[in-house]
Length: 375
Ligand SMILES: NC(=O)c1ccc[n+]([C@@H]2O[C@H](COP(=O)([O-])OP(=O)(O)OC[C@H]3O[C@@H](n4cnc5c(N)ncnc54)[C@H](O)[C@@H]3O)[C@@H](O)[C@H]2O)c1
Image 1 (cartoon, rainbow, N blue to C red):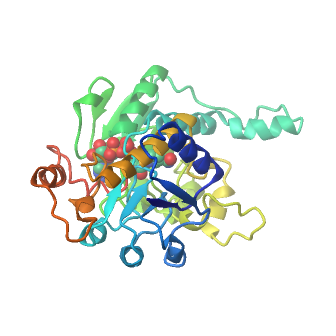
Image 2: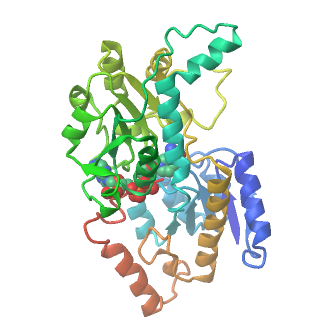
């Protein structure tokens, strides 16, 4: 079985090959072909001859691309991430394609990175680093605030939100959370509030909800007006949660005290590539870079050794389930891979497994499709 890996960086190759070698008995039928460019309508022809594609957060798998893949004989899409907002799952399901993600690499990778961003911006270590290298040991402009006793508002108390709460409790922060589907797992850390109250009361607001139609631009000019003056906003979730033009205005007016981004609305054409020789055309991103109280990273919160190892192993396990035609716990589509061999008849038991899992989401939660962008 051939697997065409798109957006493959050297580290993706290293971890996928390592996972492949480690579990050779398991994945012996898998042949890997690496492409360092993303999957899009332009690059679909490179998937010809493959049985499956392996993709990342900025690959495009809209209806047209999925149809092209399907015509080319590709039957499975393996996401090397948790988020699946870049895949048209309904189209995939209609085409009978298998789609699986990696939902559960350690959430601490992202939560710890959010803390790194908070503390960098709060204590100005990014500025101190540059200053000291120039022989400037002046402390003026580096004044921070002690985290102990400060109120942090966590928007989305899923795996990462709870991991962040656990860490911040250690710092002695007061914690507020907003989530339309509250969990008792947060009870030991703090209290739930509605979004407006969280914005008004928090010194730091950290976003950990998925990107969906209902959460796109959850931070816009209206919500920024509600945010406490001088508060810091942190986004390690998805760029589309924040309306960039609005945060620029809030930063210019001084109402927003700081902004730390690991993800950015327009990251698709920029992140994961070296543009240091290019004239970057994104004026909003460039404007953001001019603020001393803004920190932008290139979607790296997940990027730890442990997470990459788990992502590679889980991706190959998902592919193995597809090859063996057994139920895959990370499948994002109903019955998809059971339809892989045209004309075959799915076994009733296996069919029920997929139907139950996808049609009856856990109590209080939206359907898996609604959670369109975790990871
Ligand atoms: N920067 C990175 O490298 C990176 C890596 C992994 C995940 N992520 C992002 O982190 C996000 C969170 O991941 P997770 O594993 O904790 O997901 P999760 O599914 O475990 O949790 C998401 C939570 O958000 C909640 N939610 C849904 N709608 C909401 C709303 N309108 N307001 C507030 N909360 C809402 C859900 O109920 C759920 O509890 C993902 O959506 C993904 O986009 C980023």
